[in-house]
Length: 450
Image 1 (cartoon, rainbow, N blue to C red):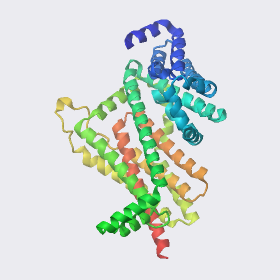
Image 2: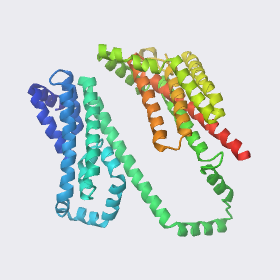
Image 3: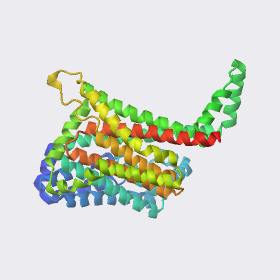
Image 4: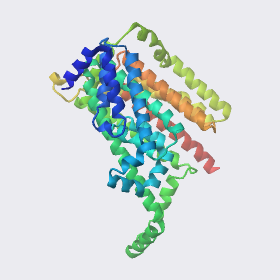
């Protein structure tokens, strides 16, 4: 069925964009997202542009324009005809009137984020624009985020369709799973917020009930309460930053261990490695080859030493001698950890028969990306720790993340495996979290003792 549809659209030539535009626009308008497969249409548009049926830019304009038009149509329907639509379904109308104030308050606070996230969920595309209009979310807030989400969604799907060509169905399945995952996370978040609101509203009753039970059974939770309070305090030397650091270390270590396990057991990640390498090899161009000097330069060892030296000098001038003295050691430690782990894993063989082997631990984890994550993380931390401007703090973090991702993509283009790239990012992130947490804890301990 899908193959027949794709063949018909290919036969239609540039006129296929008309059908694709209508499908995507209708998907985003008033509940029709339950019937019209927008992701499939967008991916087909990208795949057809790869065959020369029409240009990728024309495919992007059509898909993004349809997404934006559909969202605006759903918003207008909800804004001007929403009440009339709901009166046709008495149950929906009763529920809306019952929770109207909460829905309007929700869209007032989280409307922009909801519209953006909903663009990547089929059910969300069908209902979010209508709900935003029905809740009278201001047009000057809805329209910009609708444009941004439409451009982002269209660019991602058309780009993936163009890169993967006839293999676009893999992405469609993945996007459908991603959408379901976002929906589940959203529902879980709403349930947790509701639980939190319920708990806050009944604080006195819950405290009294707990005191009665504690007295009855002789339970004394005073020491535990004090421990948790100190752990989450932003002022103590083992306070909130220490807890956040431990969570970051645990997350990065879990990611590194998971990738290592996948390679050892030859789980699906190794097949994704091969697919990504094949896609990149089939789309190399002279222009991209020339552009690759940028990530190569940003990941060069001498440049990384210069970045870290600059962060150390700036920290010394500001008075943070701890970071100034340890910045170079942090970068050297990142190189040493990555190199040592490569040597250790190079002697391991995946636990599968040779006939089933896709690849082993060659180049895992990426030494370059480990060092890049550590170096730019140090620079971002040096800026964020010594400025009170939230804008500058977030800008430093975003720039560091952007550079790390850019260097990672450059490594993939140069032939590095995706698993090695993820492994380098995880190892570098884990090492960076350890060093920053230790640096902050040491500095606060000194102030705490004084």
